[in-house]
Length: 410
Image (cartoon, rainbow, N blue to C red; front, side, top):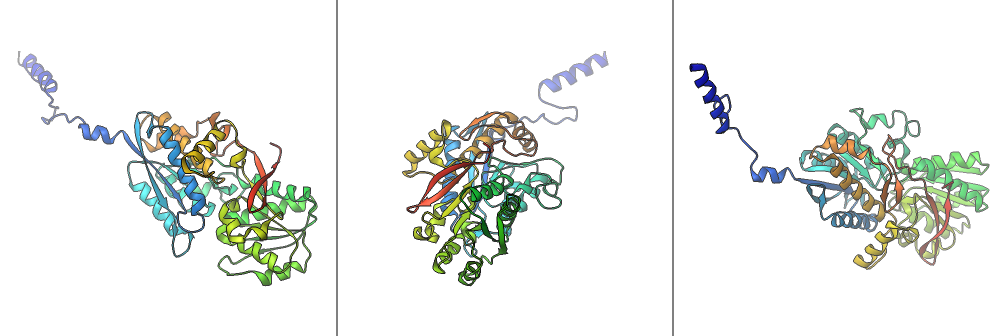
């Protein structure tokens, strides 16, 4: 009889909200349930300095993608925070600011996706930090191969960025192991026989310059020299005079607008050097033309880019450009569509995971295949690289970038 009574008490205890230890069974409050349905996406880009015009359009693209999703990802409401990894003193990204942004994101339990970085060197700072926190990172602009591709970068890359052994970093833009070589091939098509190579001594700039040089030598172009510049220097006329004496047909600069590409173009003209100038996608922005002056670049400056320029996009890409132009009153810069695509991928990764869990969202991102986006139909490979391989070349004419040709096999 006592046992039957005890059993009845226990059943009633559970039914009225008491556990076996005598305390109430606590259920989530409406506020807690609401918090569990809120996620945050952050971006980390240089929002101060000459890259700002380009990153403004990337951020605009991110916001457009989130607006189109209704600020939702599956059952979750999405908020967005725009972080700056540059300082006013430097006018460009710094390791300290990028590290601080990564740590801020990690500590915020609502942050599920980190969109960035713009500079490959900055990515080297944040990827391993975010990797330890299983926080998904999607870049709209990094192109250094070593961030993802085994055997394509420096010793220990990309494993050094993956302390957990898992891939948490993906990018929606093709890497420089394609862009550098096709630049050299294009130079040969342009009739170049002798080239002088410069780089800014940074991860992206030196990396793509080395890749250009390797291919140039392979296809029979004569490399007259290869120097690293001091990007803090105010001008490069003595260097241009020395290069002029070697008689190059082309100067290739591996670097960005922020590492003085425009000044190199100015000084090339100032010393009467008749050579062509070729630069990579780190200079594919209006700020480069403004810093050099259109007369310094007209019909002699060639720019490679991983993808198609905005006015050559089709399908959903063209729709994005049209909507962007209508919304902001001007056409987007080259990387805006990659910011848009990165945000679309972030939303899809959260939706697929179906829960507010960084590890689940990280894993979900890498399952994305045949993504039908603004860049066309593409997939992520096992290293987090896009399967897209389209490359293009632009020439500067009348102060504007003008599409010249497709590059490579695709």
